[in-house]
Image (cartoon, rainbow, N blue to C red):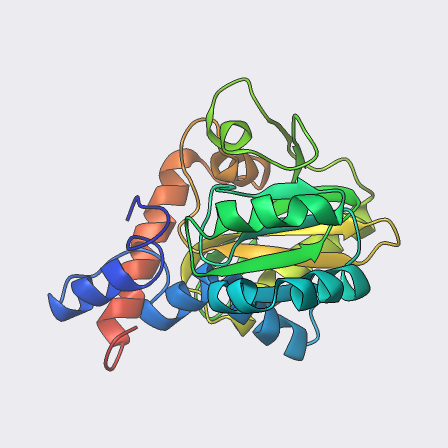
Length: 260
């Protein structure tokens, strides 16, 4: 599957293919839906002992009724600067860094154009990294990349336009930190029951903790994205990477009982 976002990466297409009895690459219906829902996935990861950003969910209806209470909760529990984003979107859609309370309404209104649930999360400092994971029962983490945005928050252009954002593979970190990133990526893959391949976006905090931002259950595989670079740094050719993804899909669909 070469799809992103709503209806392609969130379990809808996966469910359709299940009904049609067509095998597909990547995670199954439930794991895809959870992976797209940043708040639900963070709750699961936090319960499992994996660090995630402090996050407040803001349903549209609550915002319309209780704006003053929401603003007070954000100031008390998250603080400024913070990041506002839709709950179920990808590719940095409607993601906004907010430095003061007066700018929260505009950021939330923009997020609500894409989803009826917005998230307000702490603004993380440190190094943003991303790490691909391959496999089924014994997943293998690839070599992590360091993500260098052109602004405070990674943009859509940074992710997909050649020459915009910059990624360095491997990330410029000591070996023990690289291994911690890889271990966190594999733990996330297993906890969320991801399959075949995924890319886990994370932040190495200034105190060394690795916080998971979100999983990408169908990571981009264009020339400007990093999965091929990470595979190459791990000794895997482009052809071998695609072959492994397809073989994993055929294997897991051959032995499943019910939808994946």
